Length: 441
Image (tube, rainbow, N blue to C red; front, side, top):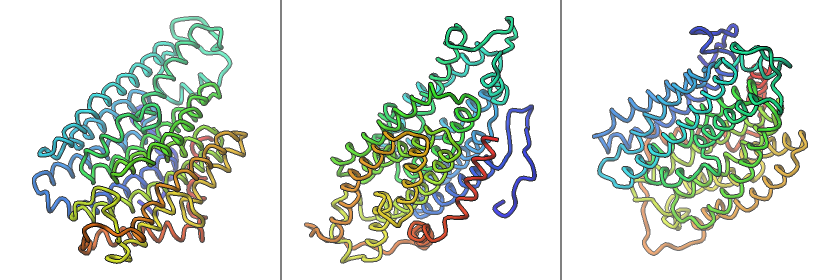
């Protein structure tokens, strides 16, 4: 799968699914991410034997639905894949039955997720009602042609004065809101901190990585390929700014690790939306590079959180004097946090640099300025990890046990990628450029 590549672009299932370079590399990234999460969770499954089989089956089922989401070439196929994914997620979030926090997380996710799915479906139905088609290729032709042939009316022009244009605009707006909820963008983020904190740690890692890969693939296909217009790109500019600002300021007061990582995830969604808001090939490529590096860093930090789970690791203060008890792990956490903060020459700096450079290239100076400002603010809570590990003296000393082989291998590979990415970024550049061209041309 990694060495080969699709011979050609193929449309499957009556033009409901598509296979091209864009979907191919997204699927490879999704499968590798899911494999890494299952690998780092093996020890957890051995300790919690009651839910091991069901959890793995649900994770694989949701991964299959996300593979369908990435290939979706029709609004109905896309919605059905999203629903299959969401149903698995509702169960996984509440899988720790003896914990009221896990049950609360599953219930919150179910209620708000059903609400967002309803909004998404309503948007799809409005698009179908006013255009008569649901296929993304047909919708792209409609939105790029000066005149639109409607099945129940004469030839009409889609412009701001036309009533049908208002309906289409509202449909696109509802679809955008449904997507923004799924990727935890502000102001549709309210569920994320509680669900991330209450769910089991491996589920939080899965929620932080896999859905974002699939949803961003869908968003690029829908809003760049089919519906692109500067009018509703302003919505993504607003959500990008709001996510960066809230992610930076809300995380400052957090003491719990998983809750802080939830706000960090919201902030990084804001950075990724910078590339999305540009609407250019450079913007798409910078988004793809940023998404890959975000996944790399998130796998690394959650492998560490899962490894320290045996010691009741819940608060940031529990890392006190880790540099004395486990110096290698302390160095690993420090490098990952510096990368999250965007300290050069680590991978996190490279991703933010490309995103801000794409924003400057398309004239979005405000986005780049606020991104740099929030990056500086976020340095405070990321570097606080380093300060606690190296300079704080804990009230009770905790002796951390060695981690298992699977997590050690994952940490080694991801740390290597984070540290030495700047030496040879060309392979990722070539892949992301090929994906962007496949989407736009």
